[in-house]
Image (cartoon, rainbow, N blue to C red; front, side, top):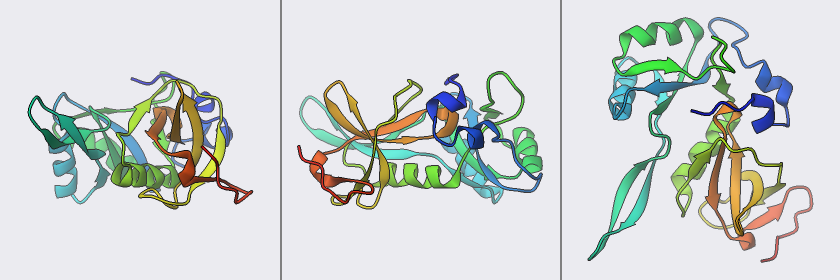
Amino acid sequence: MPTADAASVFPENSRQHNDSSPTTALEQHWFIGYTRSCQERKVAQALSALGVENYLPIQQVVRQWSDRKKKVDKLVLPGMVFVHTDEPTRVKLLSQVYGLRAYMTRGGAHTPVWVPDVQLQMFQHMVMYGREEVSVTSDYFAPGDRVRVVSGPLKGLECELINLQGRQMASIRLAMLGTAMVEISLGELEKIGSETQIKD
């Protein structure tokens, strides 16, 4: 489980994310729920049945078998589900939904962390339209260039450009959860503010 400090994984706007507890009891946020092993889909279904908005990141990827290639559904974050709700409902759901066992909290505190709406929307876009597999890591990365995807399936996505072992990765910070990344061609990017396409 990620344990990095919120300010280190998302250095910009760190004040906002350090103060990530709900401002009012009925204000809704995207909380990060932990599930029992192999219960992610059942938890998501149970939440939906209760009318609770949720997001289980699943990406269709290609796997190479000995004689063929096959598309399979991959859980991007095994053991986790995003739950969009208010504070009183968040607490009640732990007893109402079998398999939902806890929420991500900040540094041993009992206050749950939440992912800002705009970050979650960008992450959903990355998972839905990324050509390559999306991965999420709690490793710290220095801030990269702010870029915009100008072509390809991720067109319109604003993110950071990170070099990872020689691979160019479009990345999104997800509060304390870490950094979501997908490999991308430099020719599909432009630097934000300069409107200049990045050359390979």
